Image 1: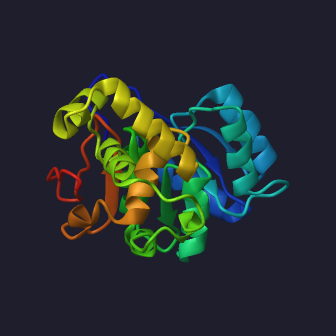
Image 2: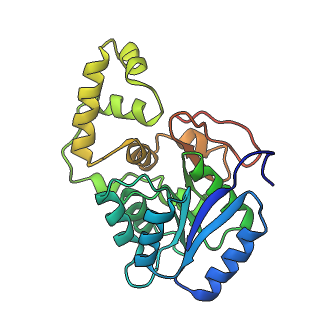
Image 3: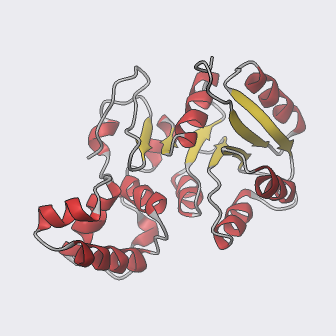
Length: 243
């Protein structure tokens, strides 16, 4: 049920199996707060629809036809697209979750979950959050092995990137570390370059991998880490500050 006067979430569906795609469309159709603006089994077609329809969220199966999910994410990254991609998968293995997140996905929801989980995931990603359900979150609370071979951060660079992930502004970080905002931006840029992080979304994703949001995980049934300006919300509706 959508609040009075609020427009529906514009959702694109991409699922490799025709019957599952039809089932997803029926499920979404029952919720008046979400409107399906396109549905496809093809990764190539999903790319076209994302470009043309500009959905609020694209819910994409990990196994699309023609080109797969990672190829879709690579194309969107090259285009510097603002598309918010929520991955739908039956696999909760750590490498699969990490690959999707570091490729630019904004959430990872398992097919084994409930319809309530899926709808919550769609809303969370639309609102600017990074969504991982319980199985995916557990896979991501280990050390980010994908970054093990990269140049190490200095203690100051790591502290700056950690505070950026937690949502602090350059001015706020400068106040905490007793440096100016320009120095904060320089340290942030150096750290992001070493880690291969392109934007705030991927910085937050790195923070999840490092366990910087672990205190929030302890009180949540699943992880919904909001990006700056959008606090995470538990299933019960209680707000949790990450960190």
